[in-house]
Length: 233
Image (cartoon, rainbow, N blue to C red; front, side):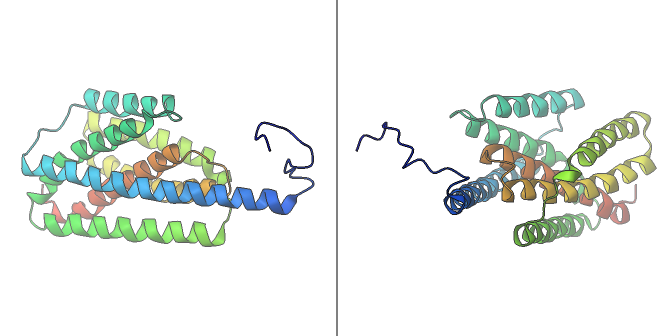
């Protein structure tokens, strides 16, 4: 039979064959989940390797302008090439760059008394939080799409507040922003996993980047919060 031949008798219609349509959607969700978590694991390992190299070789911290241009530029490239072969190099470019920006932060915390313990606590808390929230979203299959607008606006406010805290050197505001970002990042993990499970996100590249950024922000925020007790400055 010619695969290009159309026939109403062989076309699976969601209204006539709901079981077939539901099965196909379930298979698609499983494919996106499998590819997302596989790529997420690889990008986390790659980013950690870059961060470790930055710590070992004491690479200097990039300027704020370079950080913003690099982050948003690579993020734009990922969205631009999300359906092409250039998507994966762009993803590893972004995650590697974020690992590079993380390196000097880790160097700072490791240099203070109890810094290694602070990094370990932040890393452990990030892992437990991510696994717990992901498991909850995967098992309950609840739809958290209603949180999307709130989380987006919250992150915009947090970013502006963080820039203000940096320019005006307000430690208390920086601490408040870290707590806010940690909570928002936890919410985003629920939201993004729910989007995949319920079929709202079909592109595993974009799903991976969204989860990676949330995990990264959660880790750095917890690092700042846990580092408050170990930093005597």
